[in-house]
Image (cartoon, rainbow, N blue to C red):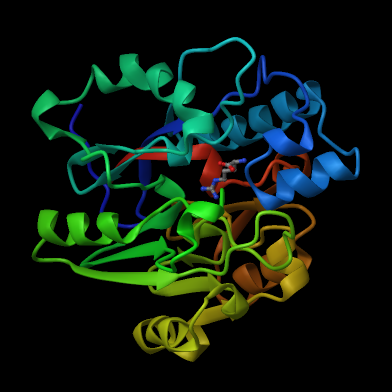
Length: 304
Ligand SMILES: NC(=[NH2+])NCCC[C@H](N)C(=O)O
């Protein structure tokens, strides 16, 4: 298989979609590792496996309607495998196996049969001091955007997943691309205050547009860089409440088609009526209770 990803929106050909079967027991508060799941467990609202399975099935049906080839990781018993995005990622024709949070390490082996289909010389294993998850890596043609956290208390946050060592690593790997890194606010318990991954606060759509939550960025100057690149009119700014429901985390099948949540009324109306992008709106609210949404549950391998 010839991998090919140069941005977030070009016509999708092949994607890995997460699985919700055998999702494991409801975690205890201590066992959660993102703020959204923490809140879900605390409120006793952890989603039922059947609901998760049905939501992912709805997503799969939309992908198939657009003739996308959908691959699945192999099933590990009692393991949450919904969020494919973070386990590995493609930039151009190279695949990177993430150095993911230890709590999710088990998930990596479930992609072996998929990795076996790649040109093995294109698989990159990262040095052990480099931490990264795919949710923090957004490819935008000549740019690579990276979500990170560089403060001294990095190790105190389970929601700090991508370190400055990755930023340096990826700059060396792609010397002709412009790598921009963005520090994100971290909070392991309050989903209104902390941002798990860059794709929870920013996500390109169409050819030159993006959805963004300004207050997710630790430094306003870094948010401003994105405003300068995209232009104010090409950004849809979401509110804190919309960020909480994960509005930025939609998924593009092409520059013309976005998969979004039925309840994202303001966003969906803007995408369709102002930007002329077709919205495939489905139910995905149960998935959001575990800290991710559409983008997080996919790992695109080939876009035209
Ligand atoms: N790309 C993403 N935002 N992924 C969301 C992953 C959520 C998962 N509960 C975790 O903490 O790892």
